[in-house]
Amino acid sequence: MIHMFERAESFVSAEELEMQLPFVRAAHELIHSGRGAGSDFLGWLRLPQEYDRAELRRILETGKRIAETAEILVVIGIGGSYLGARAALSMLRHSFAELLPRDRLPLQVVFAGHQMSGTYLTDLLEVLDGREVAVNVISKSGTTTEPALAFRVLEAYMQKRYGRAEAAKRIVVTTDRSRGALRDLANAVGYETFVVPDDVGGRFSVLTPVGLFPLAAAGIDVEAMLSGAQVAQDDTARVDLDENHAYAYAALRHALRQKGKLVELLVSYEPGLHYVGEWWKQLFGESEGKDHKGIWPASADFSTDLHSLGQYIQEGRRFIFETALRVRTPRRSLVIEALPGDADGLNYLAGKTMQDVNDTALQATMLAHVRGGVPNIGLELANMGPETLGYLFYFFEKACAVSAYLQGVNPFDQPGVEAYKTNMFALLGKPGYEDLRSVLAKGR
Ligand code: PA5
Image 1 (cartoon, rainbow, N blue to C red):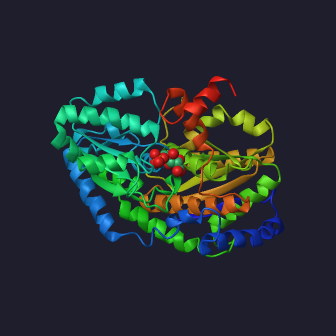
Image 2: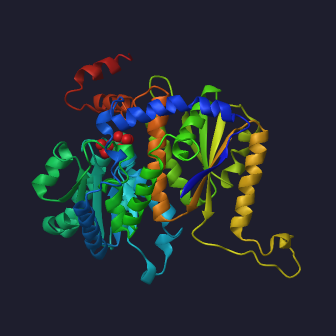
Image 3: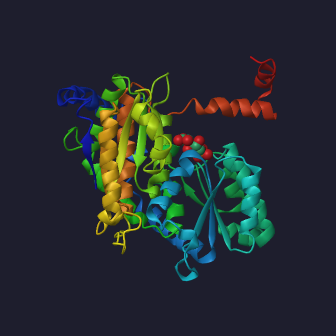
């Protein structure tokens, strides 16, 4: 479903890539033996093939119930608790899903709790009025400020609008099995809940109820996503850089980093993949960026961003490499027709599809960037369907775990994310943070 069609050969020779093999094998052993740092968080590794079928059935049933009750589902979460679902919706759904005619209109999904803007929340409440609403609040820790604040507002809105009993039927909580304020609240009110497994970290959780429940409610074929991930689980189980392209990708990015390429730009040529880039940035950034190590993950939409970032990529500082996502068969096809008179001079393209032109843009850009000193890795996705996306999620998760171990960091923790949170608690006067508050007040 995904294969590497470009291996940055002019920057990393076959011999250099082969030299990465023992290190990739060591990283693979750390993951599969469970002896590496952070091994308490390896639940994602076997999840697709061992998925709890009873839970999947409940996800599908509850999703159906919510879709029948609501026109809009507000998904509250931040980081790994929302980016996977957002990526899937943008890749798998109609580009203008919310503008489709009524008889084709799917459940609308909007996101909240991924920032702290009062403008955003107030605007959101305004558009909810007059439409049937449901809420899925997702927080593994159950204590993250952004989603907690958004849920406080949305829960009050739901109770005021529907009454406590009906609101409770329209709110679904995804959180830890036993810990956290959100778990306590869900138990106290009696909300339906799904569990984020203890051994799966936020950014590796898209194939748990974190991603699967809102997607099922939105009508996405989550079983197909899981099937794709199951294939990826098999395809990435062996240490073989020719066959296992997730490992070849990890090995290549490691070799490029050793050559001073410290920024990876994930580019796609389909706008539907924009949020795959956002999900991927969190996955790699939070997994690798520690101990003053890591490749800076950036993303761009081509050809759009060739008209803003293209100049820098072609001729700016040489610390970037690109990973291009190509889609072999996009969701739709559009043939370019001949125009009588050829007023716009585009008849030379008549008979081609937009995909032919888009693909030529990819080839042309790769040639130009490689010539300009920017190594390119190319990953081809078979299509923009749920199986391929499930495969892609797992492919990147596995590549990311290997990449982090190649750099000697724990892929599964995120100690740096806490720094801003504790400062914020201290500055806001949260009880228990008085000492830090006085340290910060002194400017230290
Ligand atoms: O990958 C991670 O663990 C984090 O990015 C979390 O997903 C994010 O901080 C949200 O955390 P929580 O689900 O606990 O609210």
